[in-house]
Length: 120
Image (cartoon, rainbow, N blue to C red; front, top):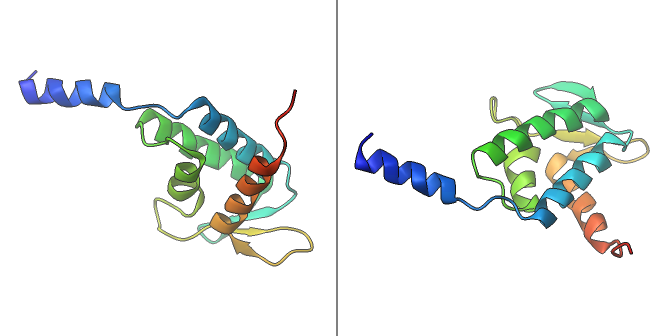
């Protein structure tokens, strides 16, 4: 192993992980989506909310492994807004509401999460 390779690997190991609050908020976002009753469009196909949450959960896991996830906002920006393969934006359609981009939907859900009073 070269000195350069060792330095890079050491620095990667020092990258901060997501804070516990960020992890909790991301999990709450996934739960909000999972139980929303909405449909989620990805690459032109519609999926039910549990399937969408599963997909975004896999993207979250990959981002955590690469030390790129430090906040709920990172999760929304890096995992929740569009396909990393095709570049197509994600859409959300909920009963009785206009279809919106997933970024707007997730940001609104995050605001609701943060506005809830902390439990005992």
